[in-house]
Image (cartoon, rainbow, N blue to C red; front, side):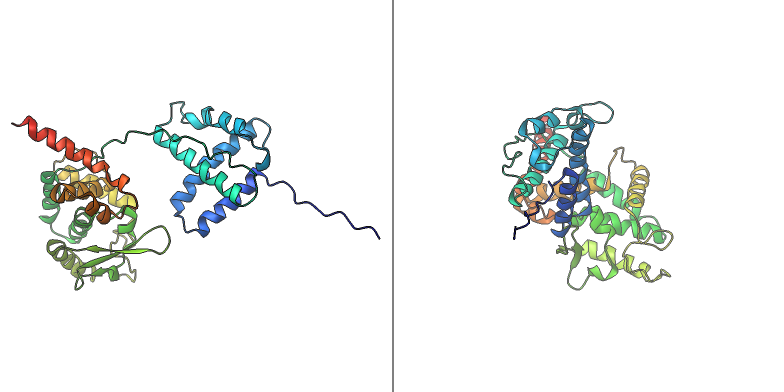
Length: 309
């Protein structure tokens, strides 16, 4: 009796490989933003091969084909035809390295084609932030106004400036996350279920105490700490709009996003303590290299001081 020949699995297509990689990213607890970013860069590679009328199985991709993609307009130019920023090109290379490393570790390819991709060092621009005087003016302008909306906004922007909380972390705060007796604010990170405690100093606790008294009056069953005019959880876009409004009211002529308030917090903290490890811990940065951008800000202030001599 003859033995039937063993059936071979069909070659893994690039489309299917990307789908499997997406599943792995989600299983690893990567944030929706990170997953979306990975898929965007991998989708450009898939489009590159599809436009060439040949979309090979992952085992058929060569290092030459990968280099052709990385030097193509899809990888080097924006949709408008402008050169992509170095940070965008580097991010795409990091995505490819992660993707092909996973393919290799999973046994789908024999060689990790992206292992040798070089990341070009990009000079990071110092972030936009408020000076100490501007930050005080902004808060004073909000705190001198009356009404529930003003109290809410005072609490929102005081939290930004005194804890360095991220925008999505602030939006996702619930009333129970404020622990005044413990002098803590509990924030949930987007990556997995990890939580962190932020210290609430005396002035911030007073601001939050006044706001919580106002928050109890809201006719809603929502657990959200900060509510919109419709008594729903406030959105990132609404916070950005309110920041623009108060910046104009305070006469601060800067274009600043809510993330700029996190930079303001970090800049102020580094100026006072001159310790990057303290700032790294306060910002919850995994790498000290990410925090080092604030040393450039310190250099700018140092030069400004010398100019005044």
